[in-house]
Image (tube, rainbow, N blue to C red; front, side, top):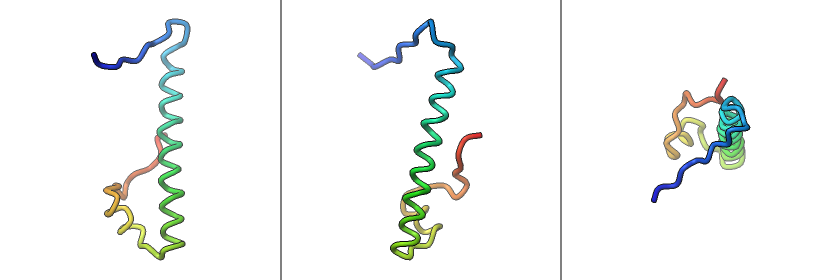
Length: 63
């Protein structure tokens, strides 16, 4: 049995999209915060950090 998302019919689909986008941006911001901490605290080059964690240099929050 595979897990599935139960969609409530009383909630518009735009709400789900908005919540998912907010969650993705929150995680992206958390990565940026951790990245900044490591760059400042451990003198790690930002591009080297991205390379070690397999993060694209073009990563950004969703519009």
